[in-house]
Length: 115
Length: 112
Image (cartoon, rainbow over all chains, first blue to last red; front, side, top):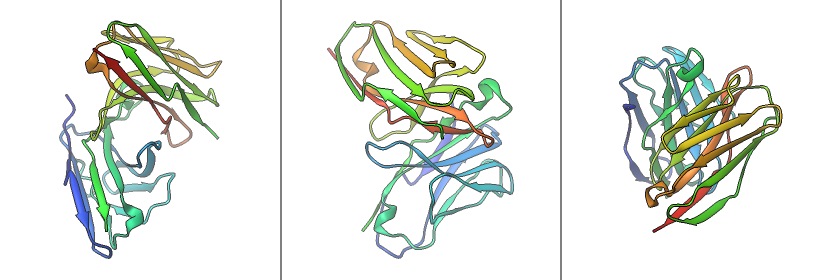
């Protein structure tokens, strides 16, 4: 059973506000990921990390930023939320190292609505 | 550029049927192919991971095959149940950064 948590599960916020979406995993996984998913669309990787102090941008341009100060924690921050940021944000982690260790485990997601 | 396609986009079957979901990818240079399940409003659950050197993987009523040369994978679900209703996503791990490239999914409804 994978242990990866996201908070909040749902967030409604006004334009211009700063928000942080939390993601934590208790499995000691080195690799962590943030995906964005709109209804009926494929998942888009927006950020990933291969370990502490390692962060990279994904394929989809995003105005968000991430940090990886601790192995278990990978928060995503939007400095100034806009309606175009309305989406579902999914966090995932994997052990890394090849083979079955590349299996990604997902959190329940955060649904963000920016008014 | 790697692209992943899933057919059909939606499928509705009566309970008890055996069914096949299809996934195709354009570049055979992959590390692995993964099948996930997504329930409405929830995250994804990993079902099966097939490494590039493997031909199939099985877990319970699920069997996934991989034909890398033709760029195809199938997910076979035996004796479907209403609890199998969900969206099934296929993704390939590829590229120098070993990222997952995703299909749009097949939405499955199993009717009692």
